[in-house]
Length: 289
Length: 242
Image (cartoon, rainbow over all chains, first blue to last red; front, side, top):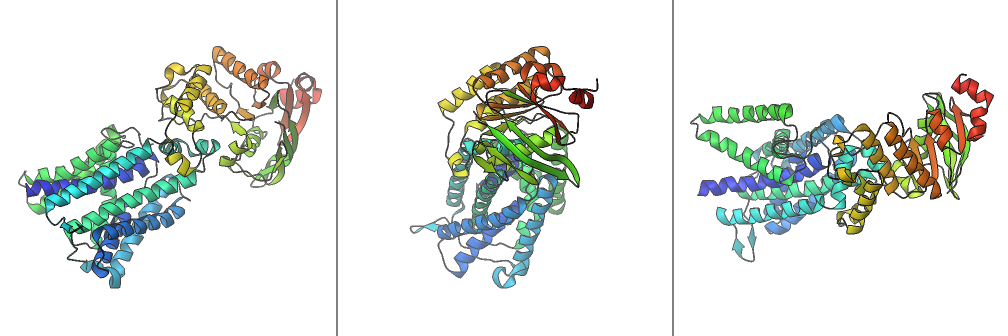
């Protein structure tokens, strides 16, 4: 049972990450490879506020969201100058920059030593220390994330995002200053990733920069592409498959080291096969061009 | 709405695409623009719709002098356009290609806006008008070439603008669809809109336009009533070649 709860917690965290990244990649067509940076900023901000200032998790979470969103605003302003492949490469660069700051600003982050003993959330005297209650909490936030994302994509704003993805110039001709639309969705997605980071830090009770590398960004992107671009349920499905899949490998009886390597290999093969035969993902509504 | 263009110029790396062009485009008529390939017609339309910044000159719409215009500002000045190479929102439904025109333009307004019955009915009316009602739920990428052109025109009509820039809307169309487009353009004329039509087909120019401008190497070669311009020996020699 504990094992299942653990898997579901991870699924919920990655579900939030995938839903938020799908808003940027699937709906807006911006191939961002920097999502792990915002995930990390949320995790570090919440952790440092809880540990250094003894703030409550939920207050730290809120401030962490502001940090993730604020950083995304600055990064997004620079990224708005790029398109297509250049956008992807520049976003990758920002992930590397944020990772380097986490690694080297040792007086703040303790660098590669990481930060241990991160407390679990508590609210009005009730502690979410037990994994089951933590799962209920994180599932609640996954549902909230999903509903907010659904509300966005079903609004006129969501339609404009898709139009930008299809033809930005034509969208502009119809009166939309597309730069602000792209910036807004980038910030919203980063805030959501920050929330996922806060829960991750509190759940594993230890963070270090190695969790928030570009490999993690690519992993989140793989979830989105596998499940389905421009389909929120696809993002959830992708998270479910890619979190469950490595666990299934355990039952093959492979040694841990080989199993770990196999996961990377399987992710790679899945991506290649998808690009070849189903570029919109399993239940996606947008084919990468 | 009258459109005056004064001394408009645009160069690309020293090559003058539009060279000190001054025109007056009237409403309630179809203003034709003709010229050989590379004469600067599409550049002119791109300047008028804000896709390109002009180096010199001014565009006057009614009494508003516009010295520079960004693409997303053109609709605010009452200008809309179609493209020579059709630019639809391919992986979106046909109906959504129209609805996008009808919704709020600012970030926060659009975030909290849900599709209204009025917007939906307006979009459906437009699709009926351009003969694409039955295709409303299909993806735009599944339309035929002619249907794509019609959808782009429908999208422009949905803006209810005052100035319509049509960049070769008849290119590659079958006779039947050409008739539909002619009808739509004539309706705009009746509604007292300013229609600017770039076209190569001289029969269509003769049939549709009231006023004609001939551009060659970015300069205005001739202008006036269509029948007069088409009979002008200078134009025949320079452009038509016979």
